[in-house]
Every structure is written in structure tokens, then in C-alpha cells.
Image (cartoon, rainbow, N blue to C red; front, side):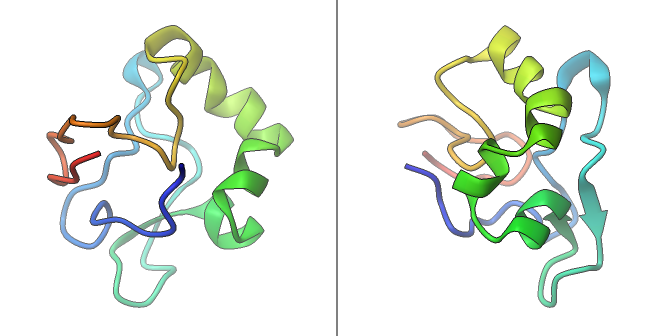
Amino acid sequence: MPRAANRCGAGDEHCCHLGRQGVCRHLEEGTVPGRRWACGLLRRLGSWEAVHGSPEYAADVRPFWDGFRPELDCGTWPGPGERCAACGEVG
């Protein structure tokens, strides 16, 4: 189940790395009060469900997850029992 908010982006680090693609093109800095980093798609579309259904996500982000961990996506990372090395969030 997607999280509405998590620790990623509240501090100096973010989890928006897409392997060889580098940092996600939808990552924004300083656009959401109280957070240094934010997902521009989430900010604009309002929910992870809408993000996952968007053409931008399908083109720019989903291919990374399909090649890395197809059962996960932005909003469900890290998976159950896993810990993100960037922000410390535990799934």
C-alpha cells in the first residue's frame, strides 16, 4: 500500500535514484513546505495512485522499477522489512 508521506525528502537526502538513469527527473527541491525534496508528480497529481497511472511515470520511472524490483514502485519503496539506505525509512 502506498504511503502518503515518508521520511524521504525531509532531510538532506532523497530516495529518488533510478539506477543508471541517475536522479529522477521529477524530483523537486524546495517546492513543499517542511521538505527539502519532493516528487513533482505527487505534488501535482495528489496521490500515488494518480502518479502510477500517469504517462510521465510510465515513461520516465516505471521502466526502472520493472528492471529492478517490479513488485515495488515509488510510494511503496522500501518493501516490507527493508530499510532505505538514503533516508532510513523502513517498509
